[in-house]
Length: 332
Length: 285
Image 1: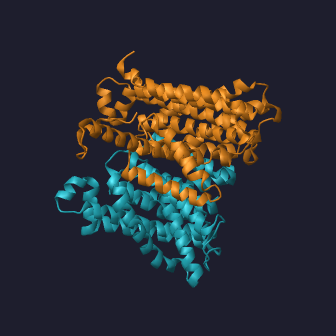
Image 2: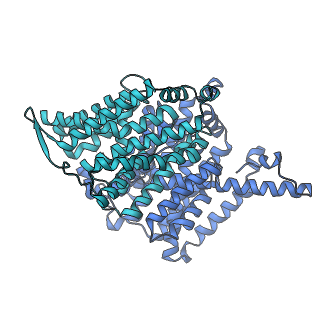
Image 3: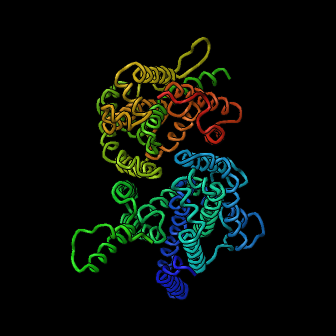
């Protein structure tokens, strides 16, 4: 193991311990705690998944809702119309999302930067409009997961926990692995990366498929939680908004950022203003603008930079204004 | 079918005024404004306040609403968007996404989520021209759209300030060296685009209805127009508007109104990915 991987050992240990404690304690959590935990974990998955393509890949996808909706419909349709089991129906959601990404990557990656974002938005609204007119899937009325196929709240929580761990591991692989280096090279300068022998299209494709599969799997769990789904909410922009806000507020292109973002946005804004959704939307939007304008590295970036500055001052034994070494501390 | 085509052409003029601000902002600032739909909806809500409070015709309310939109948009570009414009490709996109979200929440907070329409004496009356029935609202919107596009084209190509805008669009650094204050010019351009959106917004509010969350569908319509007409091209906006209007009207006539969204979004997606630089012509501004 190289040093690049070794330096994440403390963080990885914290995550592993937290994962095991949460997994072992599901029996003692209340229904409310399980519910909140499930919501946080699924938000973490879609924010972290968006972060792979958006943060490390530099492609702002507005298709989160499209893949959440596709995942929701895949699982619900399989459970309602076929005899497929729960596991197959959930995994199929990830497969369908991945296949969709594979299929649409050809037209979408012809588009650069903002055009890509507009294309993903058009794709999502097209998918929504198609499902609205799809009689087999209940059209505007939507469809429901059969009652006896709905898992218990405890097992839903456990599934969300496992999926969140997978999303974190995937991001960690991107953050530290050579694939991530290629992805970030393409983000920073696609032409230069291409001349260095990076197959830009293939790298972006892998990131897009990974992002979409995770998002589709989150959609599967969300459908099982909501039981009844309809195109308005399943493909509604709320999923995209949450993914982008949570990832950007915490810090795009970092491993811990989306986790911080989910906690801050969910607990700091959405839970506090539960009865005032309009105010919640205003504050969320303003926060996003302020972050982009004044702290583009996100809250996690601000914290790690602050900590780096303090450590640098202590090492020198005095407190002159922080200079170069403060910037060396890179968000994890 | 003739009625439908006539309606498509007239709606095309309306779509041109919906998309013009988006096109100009993209052409000059290289900024994809994801909050453009909220500019339209916000202007329509402001017009609603004026029309409801004073009883004037929605068209007259533009005398207040267009300058108000300029005044709101100018500082947003100057102090929020321009500083992040050169930082990365994602930053301005995410910033306008945040603005869109905040504005949607603000509209819902101030005006509730019920659909509203602007009341005008001509809003629902119809006329018959050469045996073709059409809505007066669409005819007025068409004329306004054509005039707006023509005026913008003349202002950009025949005036000194227009030349400055074109210079900044072509190369902001060189324009700055030549003594153009690019930051103020960017803010003014964004402000004027918002004032243009006021025209589109008033016609959306009169011919259709507005809701706080309605911005995103108009954003997509606007993008469809911009892409079909050639990104950043002013005259192309009219061509794109007509294309979207006619395709939409013909599509609804052939397969039914329920598929309206599917036709418009689906065709837009195909057009965007086949010809990312636009179907008709290149940018002039």
